[in-house]
Amino acid sequence: MAVPWELVISSAGGVAATVVGVVAGGVVGRRGQNQQWIRDNRTAAYAAFLQAFATLEMELREAFLEDGPHTADWVPWHSALTMISLVAPREVAAAASELTGAVGRFAELVDSSPKTREDLQGIHTALVEGQMRFVNAARASLDGSQLPLNWQLGGPPPWHEIEPYAPGPSVDGSV
Image (cartoon, rainbow, N blue to C red; front, side):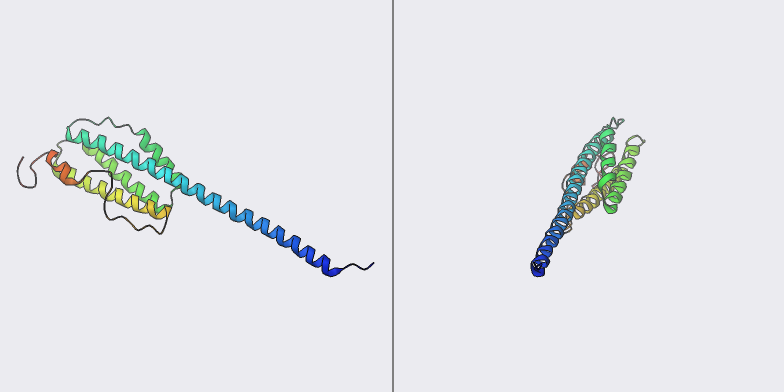
């Protein structure tokens, strides 16, 4: 009995195509799962970092304006930084590092004396700009199609809301 080679070749081709399809599907599915895991963990890390930043900034600002020592809880801040270091791309980590420097300078300023309006305004500007850089870097890392924000949401309040409570004379010269 003669072997029908056409049948053998077409069956082998079908088996090979099936195997290639299963392997390719596994690779694509695995890659998609990995990307989703990274995106989910980045989102959680970024949210924790911004929450810790907002809490710490408020505590430091209150201590500065009350001219007292700060009693900030640094544990959530350092935990959030550790999370960032695990999942953030280089640009986001650099923005987080820059904001960390501004927070550190603010903590030193709170413990300094005398406290001046100019010092507070300078650190306020650094905090706002640092937060904006972090937010925009984080947004870009989560979805490159997102446009950067050019206004601030959350974080330190606008300077005009802080200025009346800042030490020293105001911009209009009143105390």
